[in-house]
Amino acid sequence: MKIIIVTGPSATGKTSLALQYAKECDGELVNFDSRQIYKKLDIITGKDKEIIKNFKFPYVPQGKQTSNLIWLYDLVDPKEYFSSFDFTQTAMKVLMHILKRKKTPILVGGTYLYLYHLLYQVQTENIPPNIKLREKLNEFPVKNLQQKLVEIDKPLFASLNESDKKNPQRLIRKIEIASFYKKKGIKVPTKMKFIFNDFFKDKNIEFIGLTFHDREKLLSTIKLRVDKRLQEGAIDEVKKLLTQGYTENDPGMKTIGYQQVMRYLKGKITKQLAIDEWILREFQYTKRQLTFMKKDPNIIWKYI
Image (cartoon, rainbow, N blue to C red; front, side, top):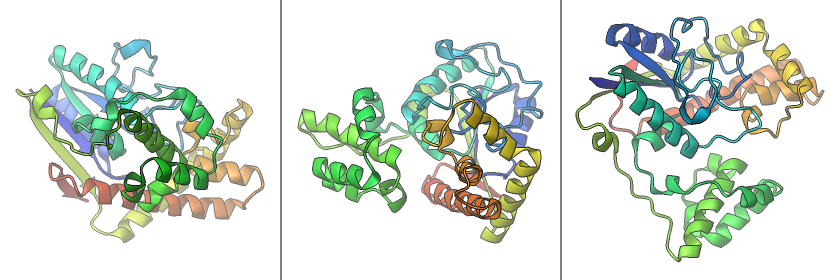
């Protein structure tokens, strides 16, 4: 038996390839797209429920409800925070259950942070969320969060890339981790190792990455993808979510596409500016993900 992993940026055909493997290898799909984990976020996140309608999995880990179309789809409410720690804990239960039934797990998605923490033993990931600290830090602007992390662990702050330094959720998590280790009087550990060989010693692991030959093709694909989402009803989807009481501060709503459409609906920017910004943010995000993924020597890349 084996475990198959299919990753890469948006619109590279990951789900189609994963479904092909599922048919060939008697497999079951496990999603690791951090946005598709959320309920109600369907159109802009690109959930393809039609293409996987024949894959129905009855088991739900930890009492969580799911759509039964793919593992870890529609798992949590947009108001809930679902970290890479939460994902790792849940995904491991799913993988063990699939293997126990002698099926082939096929991990598919583009959130490499989730995959990274699942595949590699990142020692800080066993620190559970500190809800009280998070509630307090959520009131801080980014500048104050940066200052707070510098005060606790300056080297840790210096090790972050520019994107992470401006991301409030990631800053809060780093403060959480740094605070935990400061109480113990030790530095934040950074060593890691590939753990799948420990958990699944008798399994053949196939790790595939799909990507584009050049950036122009990537950009044109993102433009087509955004246009398709708009035609499918992206704006109406956001309107519905707003009427249900969701806001731009909810964890699930802090997603590219939703943020831009919300700003348009609130009259802060024009529709065209919202679309242009959506495309730009998708392009920038995809490039960051690829930079991160390219550092992983275990991925076998296929160019399209």
